[in-house]
Length: 332
View 1 (cartoon, helix red, strand yellow):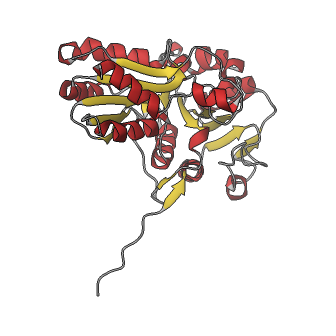
View 2 (view 1 turned 90 degrees about the vertical axis):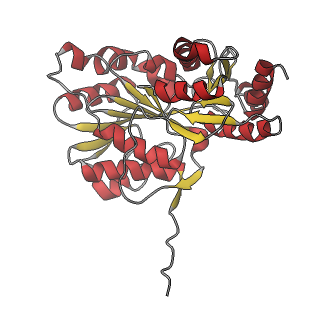
View 3 (view 1 turned 30 degrees about the horizontal axis):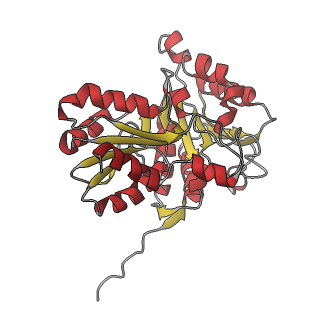
């Protein structure tokens, strides 16, 4: 009699975050979670629900509304032997604690000659699309990628969310995990066991032959939709999800461009000065002789995120804009 096949476990992105945090707390006795409303309320988006009941108030702490205090606590605790997970409710709030992030968290290990490690993991929520307006909808990954001493990852799928949280918490450097609020309901396969995704390793989510699209965060899903539309034009697009922005897997992107000879970078953040500019620069520096056209970019316009749903829908890049940019680059 044939053995019954075990159906893979699927979870929404939000539950995969919970799974990752739970795995870390079980694995590391000196890990704890701290942030605004993470204990009693389970977090503003609910991805800490059940954590307090399982691990108790000695390891799950609610804080006052003070981002400086949260990050300062994480820096101090990690420097003295703990492995905290700190929650910054919205990425936009980094402005409240940028001194702690840029001048303490990022630099302390260097300034103490490596005698101090900072195994602190920050979870924060980015992205537009929920009509939360200009102060709760930004994608500011370029800010933190510019700071030596920090690692920055952006999980796209439920599988990546769990695996990258575990990897971040195992790292002896500060790692900022940039989550996406519009992906919280997305379903995907997530193994029950603990697993890690290497930081600095990109994922080729769609192999292709004659065009490379490097997509950041939620834009990976828009790039995959665009790739399906581009098939009708005879364009076989390869879609790469970096997953890790700092460090960045340049080698995978360059190898793809050497094959396809064309590239586009797409991100939800404002186009001007975004991480896409850095990726485009690396491509032209290391694969210039293989390029048949300039590297193209798609990003948001240079404006705060609008509150109006109609304006916000126009603001956030999507598959149609990716297709339009590819056609423009190719002159079709």
